[in-house]
Length: 216
Image (cartoon, rainbow, N blue to C red; front, side, top):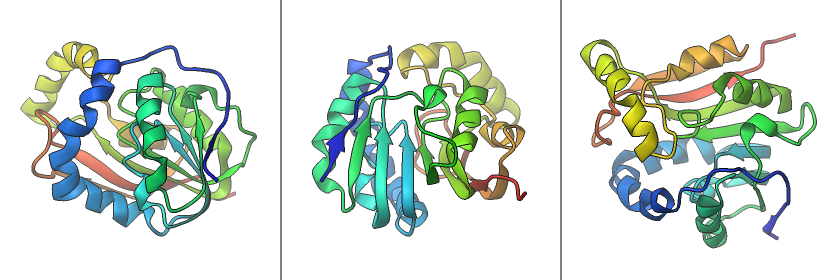
């Protein structure tokens, strides 16, 4: 049975962003993003933590998981996520916790899933440190994220980043997320860079793949 757990609430609520998020991202989901989600998530098993679960775009793609904790601190996004619980094929538990403040014990999860999340967390190093802490030694971080581009596009992202953060619920256009993952002590295995079409304005460069804790 799908359920909801209590915990520390996130302080931010972005009702306008939540209302329009699925409409804006719908063309991406239909053309390529839904397929990428399916490729990365369908075969994941065991205990899964999804950070920043948003409006629930991943729910229908879990096929083999024993249990999914879908963590979403924004109340407006979490309400839309709750409405989509019927799409899930596996047990899902909703949680309001932030990734920087996970209440779970060390080595709890087989997989942590982050799709379009690490761009917007308030403290990226702290978030990734928590991800590494709750992952089991043989666990995996699974990511789909947009990242800073090179050259002129990257400089344009740098210039537009402050405005974009205000419009897009704290999203950073210009984060080098792959480097941040490695800096957190997770080993890419592999994380691929790609340039999908269509995409949102100035989000041209993306990454997808997995990272693991270092072998002991």
